[in-house]
Amino acid sequence: MKHIFFILLAVLSSSRAFVNDFHLLKRCRTTRLSVAEEKEAALPKNGVSSPSSFREAEILGLKLMQEGNYEAALKAFKNGMKLPGSRPDVIRTKLMSGPSPVGGSFGGLESNNVLQLDEFELQAAHYNMACAYAQLEDIDMAVANLKQSFENGFDNYATVRGDPDLKSLQGTQEFNDLMDQYDAKFNPFGFFSKK
Image 1: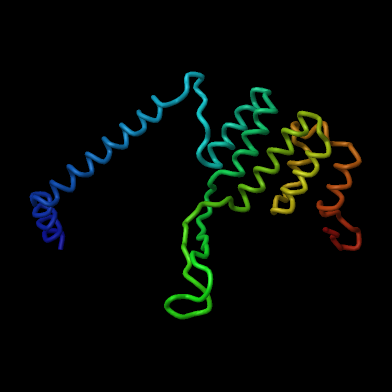
Image 2: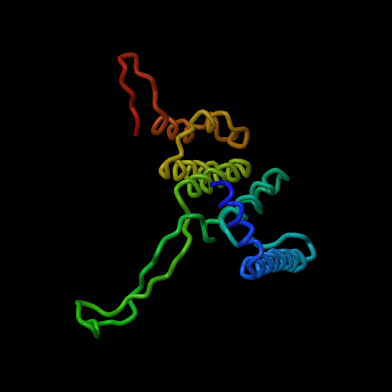
């Protein structure tokens, strides 16, 4: 059995189709390299490019947060919510009004493939905006975004209570009310109360 495999491999490697495929693959790798180099060369003089996806905007916003530029970070997070995410979806739009020309109750549809934000990206976006608003000492907006993060499924309440970016929130009545509403409290009778 091993001999047949090696003979087949030898035949394939010497075939012209295999060689052509190898050269095509090599050319694709070279093309990818040159496209990456073109993108690098196309960067603005200040070295900051505008993000083209949610993840790029999130990374930019987190970098700006680390630098202490909270207003710019907030803009990056807000912009990221308008950019493509990682969840593929199909959006259908009506092309024609009235009955369908081929029968049916209405005209034709057009399908567009899009990338939308998934639940984790929504959680991260609102949580990061809450952190930026907290650093800017806008308590109401910070609490509102934290609530949006919770509503999108974020449930790591220990992180929220210990996050240094949210320090200006901790201890405020708004923050305590929000945490009481979402964070499960232990009841000595064994019941958990949650939202």
